[in-house]
Length: 200
Image 1: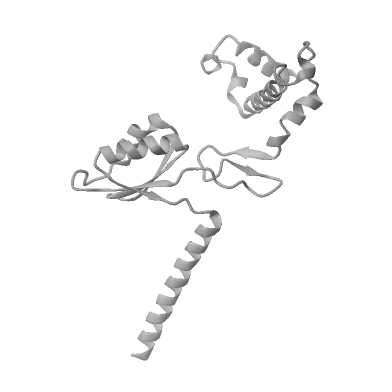
Image 2: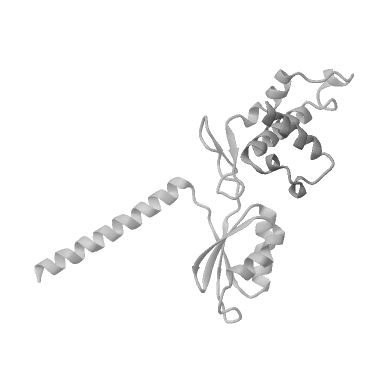
């Protein structure tokens, strides 16, 4: 009970102060994060039942908890993913189809002979969330969190003299088959080399 009260105190304090600057220990642990997440989730449900949306609440009647949970039921068992192929995973069913933009593949050119991933991150981060996978000193793949970020990043990279191409975002099963094919090819080559060496 005492710990719950500390969280309540911190939540009230957060209405007027930046909790990143206060010294209350409970503001900086996983339990407090869970409480805040729950509070935000319920607030979203309340907003979904806003009087401007629901006719029966036009006269100031507050929505019940049943109505709030009904409004947020569409998000049940879903975990948001910030920078992944899909926006969320669903614990009680199939994951949604990816709505992320394709990857951006950039290669070095006469103008840009070396690719600095740190410099690229600094330049593109203003457009949104990005992830960079380094293939070599002359090639990287960039994943963008949204389509606006994808368009802006592609444009500025072209303007900077990189060779820019679009890499189609494959599904998990496609990637699995691709890796399996690589493994089978490698196994076949090793077996062939072994057979040739035995014949000698």
